[in-house]
Length: 165
Image (cartoon, rainbow, N blue to C red; front, side):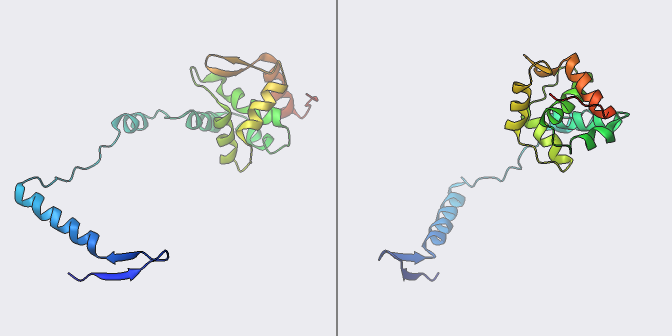
């Protein structure tokens, strides 16, 4: 085995090939002693596979997208998010999640939801819009939940009669 020595930037001498030589010798010793490690395939997560196989969405984002696809005004809701109304953008995922029991829709989920539709909407903006416009959503143990005033706001926006927040 050939080694090659070069001088480094700071005056150090580097010996190329030495590391490979040492690894090779260690592997030979392990093999001779019977300590050679057997290759183990990484385990796949069966729970995630089983959930997807059963037809259940694994994440809140997947569930939101599924509800949007089946909603009668789904295309209209997706188009409404392209308006520059941050409160509306924050409320639409909560509006869709009303039918989903026990699913927490965080500001990050809201941001990812709009990213799937080609709208840049940062998670802090989603949280700030809900925080500043009191009465449209409330914080619960399961995350923010839309209120009746929030539902009216979204439906008025869909009808084209949106009032100023």
